Image 1 (cartoon, rainbow, N blue to C red):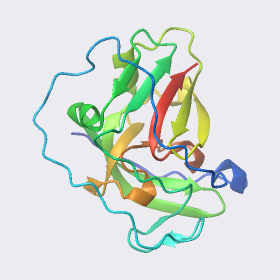
Image 2 (image 1 turned 90 degrees about the vertical axis):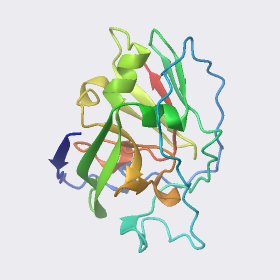
Image 3 (image 1 turned 120 degrees about the vertical axis):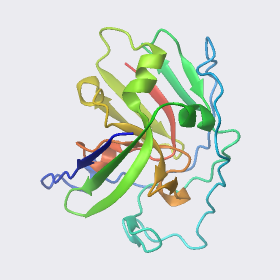
Length: 209
């Protein structure tokens, strides 16, 4: 397992670009059916899902239990029914379980999430390279962007040219433990070279356009 270190500091660009306003919860739904099995089974250590906090800090406020700042609308997602769909301009649409992600090659990155002008959160994130998932799906030539969708209704787009580096992750761990519920459990995007608005929490869908 390779460990890369990234510290990204980017100039001020305003709150809306980094921390979208809270939205209503849409839950987790998926109508996508994988055209073929995504992965063979593998030996995994059982995961005890993290518990939601009794009190949720205010928006953009510090979560003292982790040292991370709060954005988005917290989602409590059943790991047994969680699915991440990969659709759009791909040869093999995927519906991935939490354990599917854990069965793929694991990378860890020490990276700084930067919300310009508001906060910087440092930590070690671990998961599967986004490129590995896109390769599994067979991203088609001519694709220009990815739409990343959160279970809380937030969505953003990222140019394909910015997502193919190995250090861009679909992370399911933070500091060696499952992601905290407030910060994206079961899975979130981690883009060390991009602003925090691209680090979508509670990631449930990737659409290749």
